[in-house]
Image (cartoon, rainbow, N blue to C red):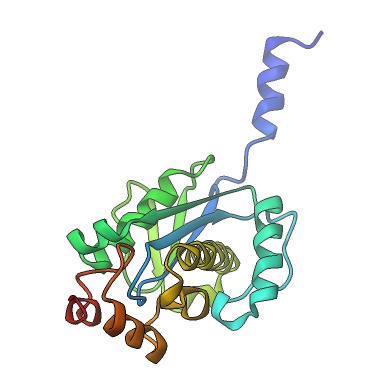
Length: 205
């Protein structure tokens, strides 16, 4: 039976490199007129790379769905978080986005040493963090986070469509398209709409 000392040495060899783990963070849904804003945080496994990661907006829906499953299966850990419509209306969309990002990072099963966030703003974190403009196209972990956030939010929009079919959420995902604005004018806002957004506020009956 190995000694206690040898067990401790064995455990030390399992530690990650001295710089520690890096998490990528991105959001989906800042611009739409309805639904929550979603953020994801991902720590990838450098020894098990995932091919084809890119900014989620540059991928087809089918490719995003496939990568969504692959990221969830092969990442060291991930977390997806939301800020609800009511929080968006209370805080404003920027602060609600930062809240969703912080929730995603804090929900990670493994604590990262560094958090890389897409864009030019950072959520309030106790961890070291850096903002990277266009990070979703430059940093694989941020690309992975963008894919998780986008697919998760699109699925929420499909659920919203089942509940409120007159607005066409399955088509525009909550963005202010002509179809969406026409439905708002005809029917007024639903509970899932962001009442603080001007096109929604103007449509109140």
